[in-house]
Structures are given as C-alpha cells and as structure tokens.
Length: 254
Image (cartoon, one colour):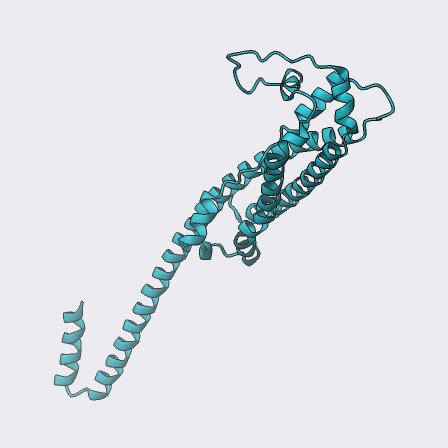
C-alpha cells in the first residue's frame, strides 16, 4: 500500500503536476491521520468494553459477599436479641415473689450465649488494594465501599467491649448458681454431645441470693447495656450493607 501511494506521488512529480502532488500529499496525510484516529477509537472502544466486563465481574463478586454478610448479620442479630431479651427478663424478676430455678437457669443460659458477626472482607479488600475500585463508575458506590470497614469498626469495638466484660466478670454473673444448669434448657443441636452434663441441684436460697445480690445485678445490667449497643450497631451494619446492595443492583447487568 505504501509503495502504491509512493508511485502515485512519483508520477505526479515526473509529470510536473506539483500542485496536484501537494494536494495529494495533504490528502494522504489526512487519510493517515483519520486512520490513526479510527484505530485509536476502536482501541478505546475495546478498552471500554473490557473495563465494562471487569466492572461487572467486580460487582458480581461484591454482591455475593454482601449477600453473605447480610445473611450472617441478620442471623447473629436475631440470636443477640434473644440474649438481650433474656437479660431484660432476668433483671426484671420480681424479688418479692418466690424464685423459679428452672426459669433462672434458662434465662442465664440464653443471656450468656451470644453471637459475634465475623464480616467477610476478602472481595472488598481485594477490590480496594488492587485498584479495581476505579472500574466502578458509580461514585456513591465507590464511596460506600471505601467507608465499609470504618462502619464495621464501631460494631467490632462494641462486640469487643461485650466479650471482655463477660470474660472479666464471669464469676460475678454466675455467682450463687451453677452455670451448667443452663445447658439443659438450651438447644444444642448445632453440635454433637459426646457426654451429657448433668445439672446440679442446689438449695433454692442460692437462686434467691442470685437475684438479690446487688453486685450480681450490676454486672447483669452492664451486660444488658453492652448487648444493647451491639444489637443497635448490628442494625446499622445491616442498613449500610443494604445501601451497598441497592447501588450494586442498580449498576449490575442481571
């Protein structure tokens, strides 16, 4: 092709058609420039198509992770609300009436058996650290993904406070009555018991002391407050994840 154009230019010069030569040369340059621009445009289109495909892959992976986190945070929240309700009922036992040992065993077993949300962060961390976040065109979604771990940190902090408090005050929370007695009132179908732990029979006065002991009551109230903050933050985490999911669904090709 180059030889062909060169031959035309040579013939024009040899025939003394200088004006036509320059017009032809200019036309040839214009054609070359247009060809380059078309090639660049095609290349840009190809890059855009590749980036769109990459964006969709990122969004699909993020959606799967968000859905898994939503499933787990909802399950853990329901579990922790049961714990919170048990704390509330335990704190409001009428001290003027005779105690019900079986009820107290059940409430204590439920109240101490809490759940902790362990967020899956593999996909979002990879998206951010690898620079894939820039593939996502929606600015609001990029912002939420950048804020996700920060939003999660409030929950993690409250969950740590709860865990540390129970660990440091377990002897007070379980004073006067045997912890093992709460086991018989709980659903343990999630694991196989090799051995059955038999409850211990203690004098009913132990249960009366349990509900009348101010230090025990204070400890349970603190646990109730800690658990309240955890459940509040669980709902905040859930709402945040739903915002992310909504934006993903608006930008993903189903």
